[in-house]
Length: 313
Image 1 (cartoon, rainbow, N blue to C red):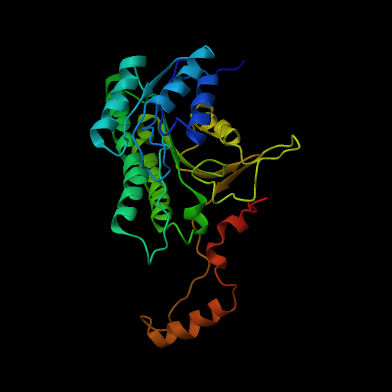
Image 2 (cartoon, rainbow, N blue to C red):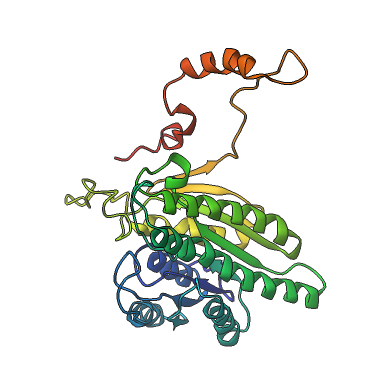
C-alpha cells in the first residue's frame, strides 16, 4: 500500500466522530502518525460533559491497524489547550507536519432570534479554534525553518462550508465563522509559503451529526449503492492536500463530496459601472444599477452551489 505520509505527523481536531474521525483514519492509513483531538462533548451544540472516550477510541482504532496515534482531550478554542495540543504532537513524534482543523459546534437560530451567546460560542469554537491551532503550528514551522535555513514541510487543511458559499438562513453564526475560516486560510497561505507551508480549505458535504438536519431525506442507500454523503469520501482529499504531492496547492477552497471535487475560484467582478462625471450620484447609480439587477434572477449572484452543479441528490 502506498504511504505518501510516512514519517510525517498530523493533528486532526474534532476527530472523535464524523468527518474528523474519517480524516484521522485516512491520514494514518497513508502513513502519518496522528494526534486525535476531540473535546468529547456529546451535544452537537457543545453541550454535555467533556469525555476522552471518542478521541481515545479513534486513536486505539489506528493503533490496532498498525499505525501510531495518541489521543488529546482538549478545547481548541482555549488558547492554552491549543498550545498543549501542538506541543503533544512535537513531544510524541518529534515534529508537527500536518494540521487538519475540523472541530466545531452548531447553535442554529435565525438572525433576528439569535442570542449573543449563540453567536459567540459558534464563532469561538470554529473560527478562534482554527486560529489557535494554526497560530501555534505556524510558530513551530517558522522556528524549524529558521533553524534549517530554508523551507520545511507543513500543511494546513481547514474546514469551511457551503453555508458560507451559498448562504444558510438559520445559521448566521456558522456561515460567518466558515467565511472567516476562508479568510484565515488565504492569509495563512500567503504568510507561510516562504517557510514551505501550504494552507487550504475544504467545504465538505457529508452526513454527520452536525448535518443530520441538512440532509434529512437523503438517507444512506439501502440497496448497497454508493453513499455519496459518507464522510469517508471527503477524507482522501484531505490526505492529498496533506501530502508532498500537493506542494503547489496553496490558498485554495475546494468543495468535496462522494465523487466530486470542485475548485472554487475567488470572487470575480460580475459587472462594472463607470460614472459619466467625476463621481457617482444617487440618481446615476439608480439609473445604471437598478435595471441590471431587475434583469437578473433573485439571489443569482450568490447561488454558488447551483453554479457548481452541486445540488443535493
